Length: 323
Image 1 (tube, rainbow, N blue to C red):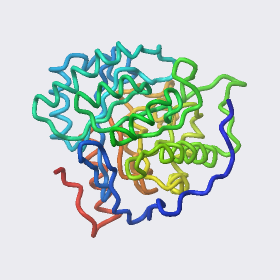
Image 2: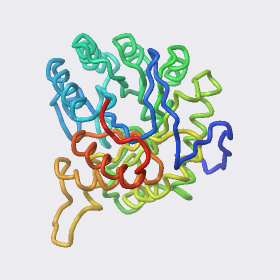
Image 3: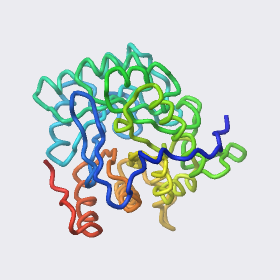
Image 4: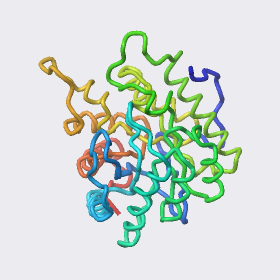
């Protein structure tokens, strides 16, 4: 279905100063993430079929070790998911997701790790169990559209909420670095269309009781967008911020990053493990546009790059030292 192209004016009271924002993302359990400098959300997938780190953190003990390492490397929070959202992925039931993520979240909390945790799911049942286990936010790649009860849950629990844009669910999607002729995602203007959809999602969430400060928006790079449309969304970061909410930068290791980094002698685009350079470059491009929170695989490298970039573009602002 073609996204809405209706122009919706942002809520004036929520509009950010994208150059000098001192806002924070409000989470559950009286936690928050200050957005006064670049912050990192480390990816901890508990899935056997993730495009990047399949099976690396299926066991709680392994996930705890990874979480501790990510925090040492500079992560400000953890994003834990039990279903791969890569294009073409097979869907995973709520029960299976719960069996994967809840033991991991519980083990992380039992290990004394108190940084915020988001649960990456589109299902309210999974989100509720994860919040009970110690999560502080819901990261919903469907923008709250797949399971409408997720919005009520976020409102009732007072947790953080990420609303992402996508055209279709993973099992009906295609890889974002190549589309067959006639299968190109259709947008009138990808930046305006995505902004309009995200504005609709956020207005709906606020109208149903989610605190405006708890909402983070994600343009959904790689989800139903061509390579050029992904790049247009990165170039349009400032325009996307006009929706009135902070943005999540989530380009890390996605297939389009490999495609745009190809050299003239490359026969094929780099695989996920070789997309670090492009991922960092695109994170910095988003940083320049006003993004302050980044969902990443390579925490140490991204932290160092963003720290250097931040000290260059904002020399009088707080240094990106991990706290």
